[in-house]
Image: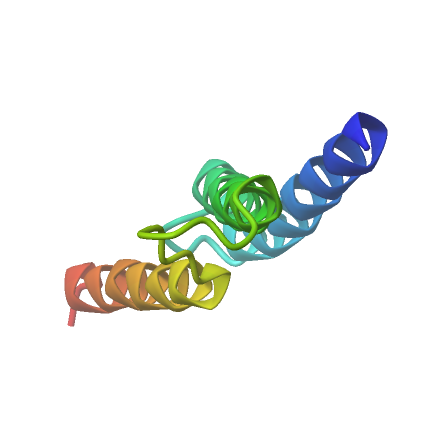
Length: 90
């Protein structure tokens, strides 16, 4: 299981780096480092949320929904994108 998680984290970071490289090649803001870290963090939070659901199956009083975490990640990435758009010179 640990190897699978490490592979998922590596793949997410690699794919984020590819997008970041393309943005750096075109000299845009939010390049390699930003996209790599955002992809890594998003993957990590998603893995943690799915593993927490498996860790506490059917516990009373604990309401775990991993889809809420994924939704929050999408909203956060939207805010990052909006910040990049507003910072671009006119």
